Length: 584
Ligand code: AMP
Image 1 (tube, rainbow, N blue to C red):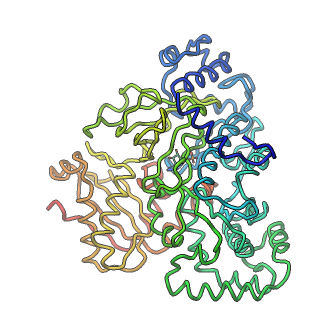
Image 2: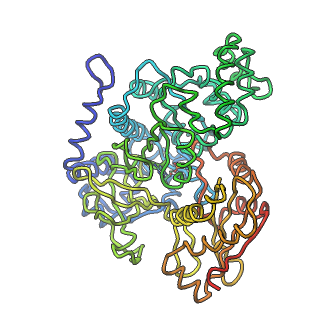
Image 3: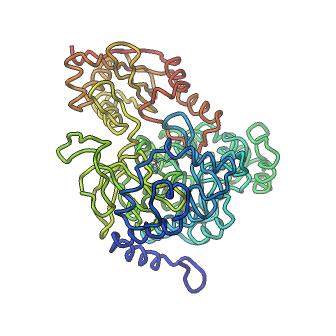
């Protein structure tokens, strides 16, 4: 979608999006036909007896719904070097590793050139809408808190790394994004540096050096941006010292390649800039860093990051840092493939929706709840097509992709909130597997977030207390089992306040299954564990030390039992413990 002079032509991209979404049903049929035609001879489709048919009816009749566990043996064979057409006719060029934050284990997923092109297509689409709403000059820079992830070579010789690193590594990435992404303030050496803390420090330093040129501030997940700004609060004096001296701190920046790249940018002592930053920071620190982003980067137009789902907790903090700058919700996708673009960037994060692009994959949706809120049998409900979904209903997303996933259950639950022409607009609800459930109760990550919000508004706000981080767990080690909420607060709270919080959390789970089980004592009193400051930092560090990519880190708001390492850290760092008296 380049204009005549080779530049990005947003209106053409938008016109194509309009055309694709007007008759999404036809585009979906054609997308399925293309996927099945191209891959007619692959082992997986041969085995299920599709015999070259490409219509939706035959597809649904022959191909079973699949989870990652079902596909794992096939993906494993590809990773181990089987070059026969196992899942796709065209080669799988690398393996994407999921974050592993859901179940404590990283999933292997196939990645190929088609997936790269389609991801770029989604990025281009959302950029066209974003740039129409918030135009930025071409000569600026982007302050991006992005981090390349470690990679390794599988037995069969494929590179395995995160999906985002697979994108960055693609030879065409720079060319594909040149017209829709401003150059990053930091050099590649910083992005791909070996140490996360060092790269973060350098991103801040490079951002300050380009202060006037920064037009956008970005991180993949909102958590990373909060982490970056919290770090800034602690290290700004050191950063000013580096700028004043014209050399990066010898203790903070130690990797030779990173030092060389950053030293080249610093070049000479700049006491004028150091004084200016220090003056601003002294003022900002006395207002608890409110509006730090526009104060330091006065020409930034917006902040762009994932602020939905488990990231919604950070919206308040990000708004605080962003002052009046708009927070623009980033698109919805996964290592498996992209799902929807944010084409209404002006909408606040709490109401952000993702419009499904009907040409990027074949989508089905398994109904999760009936409209009166009562659960239908989840596994037995028949999936419906992209254009057959109903506004107001919840669904699990199922994808068939150009990279060899067939009727693959994503595990994510979304709510259909409307249509863009004939394609649905989705609100991300939660990761379906992450749930608190002991008996007949079911509470999702979103329900836990609502309970935390309600307690924060009713009790903590009056005490000037804030929940910095939280998660929860269904503890079945005692009988009856009970919910445990772990949280870290910004300051000490007295025991009466914390007891009231514990009771309020228990009352805030309004799911009928929970309430009746609590009344019947089939679920025990909710337990609140107040954690020592820095506990969630330990969780992050532990995940990073096991190779989890910082770009993708999303703390599960419901901790699965399989996440034993994280649960050990949480349980080992409780300062105070309360049990609810709400149902006594
Ligand atoms: P990963 O497989 O590690 O790439 O993580 C992908 C998962 O992150 C998705 O399946 C979602 O659960 C979550 N996710 C991705 N994009 C968003 C978004 N915009 N809002 C909320 N959650 C998201």
